[in-house]
Length: 205
View 1: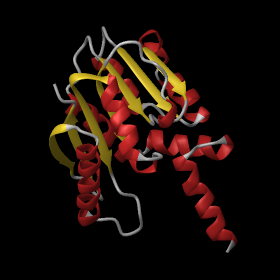
View 2: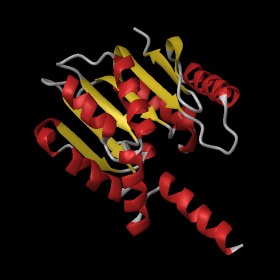
View 3: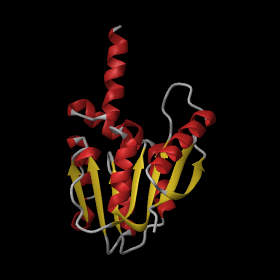
View 4: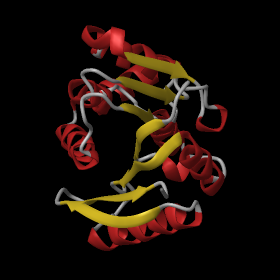
């Protein structure tokens, strides 16, 4: 029973890193090869251009934030995360781009103002944990310019996850984006174990 409780607490740290356990979870997320491949791949699918303004929801240790900053060299990169530990870690990881990134400790249902419309939004492995995902996605669509892009990615981490689990996750993300009013939806897959699904959509023009 005690081992089960400890395991659940550690799993919880990957959902909401806090304290020393959160720092350990953040280190694991930052150094796991599959995490880096997944994040770099999702950013590449968004085809971010140098002058664009982009937002990542739930940036964790900041791997994708760094990739976005490397592409949006004349633009602005925003990030929101509900973990203060991850804000600290991601800020340290990306300090070389500090003048072009803004990382905020907040939840997806309390988004700050970004001043002007965004060009792209992404979220990797966290949309399923949002409160009322369709409502959150409608809010994000309202923050995007007409024709702005969104990418939601999922690599299932449940025991026994396989290609079928990933396919079901992709359908769920596609349904959420459809409900929120996004169009031109497409699904891409990265062959990891289990595979990663990324569903991309466009804010109607």
